[in-house]
Image 1: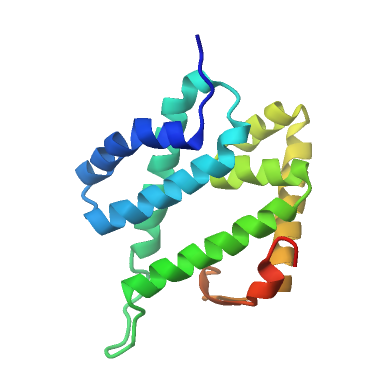
Image 2 (image 1 turned 120 degrees about the horizontal axis):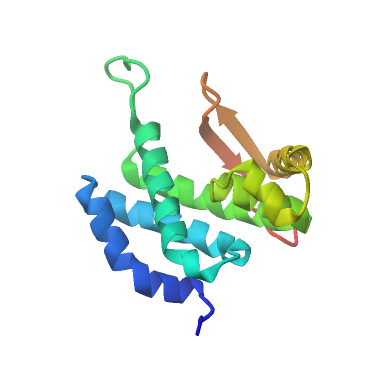
Length: 186
């Protein structure tokens, strides 16, 4: 018998072992807490697209691995910073990411379902585009177009409610969000 998975049941079943998984890879407890929050946010958002509940374990570990890898890539220094450059406090960075994540998810929910589902699969779950095409019953070029159009619509929604600043590598470096316009109904 196959039981339907919920975000809470997945959290209860996997949080302790994912914590050990991340600890064995050298992350400290505060970072593990942040990574697990991001992992379970992606699981919660992506759960409706999980087609085969028997593969939940590999799906959860793939998400965890990708989140950890993205974190390592993000903190890898790309240039020598000048002495005395003020860096944001870690708590501020965590709060900023959490706040922007809420805004992003609100805007993602505003997208039409085909675009939203394609972005969740491709960008949040790192599903290959050919697999996105298969799950949606469309061609590979159709999936690529859907993902691209969804990203463009999401970018427009975000630009309408937030002022985003990017660094020289195209990475988000700062943002200012007008909370009223980021509300789902606003």
